[in-house]
Length: 220
Image (cartoon, rainbow, N blue to C red; front, side):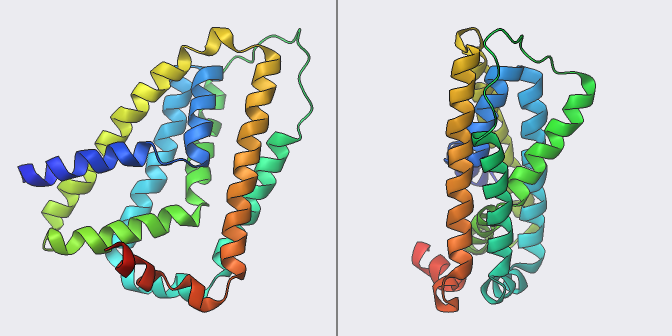
């Protein structure tokens, strides 16, 4: 059991630093809206991960086949990311005299949902967890208890690392002028647009190019 925990912690740390839309939006939320807002956003992200892990564990083979046969899933997720990124990137700059927006209790629900959906619509996250399940499962003898311990530890390490990132990003709050905030949003919007384009391109690739089984075999 101890060896499973040792193996899960580095993977959780690595997962927290995977460069993607969630990574940058989390840092932005921490810097602009504070620790609590970023924490709530991150909990939404983690809920999506838990759902993906559960889905991958209980129906990995069927999910692999569906992803191979229905590339439209990639296109849909890509379009959502693209539209959301474009909305952020091309939003009108706020006046320099405008005071910072205060986060109220009603906003926290929106932040949680935002974190959940931003992670959930990225089909690449599901593919990642499918790969982890297929590669790690046999090494854990597909034992439900060992699998639960491994992934709980992995998510726990991911969450703790995110907390450190949130605390560090929060230190930047005093240095963020409205103009710099606008620039940060432009960059995050561009990243979301790029992520959406990549997903859409995957959806339009020939079916042979979407063979996830072969891709996972190469990784293994």
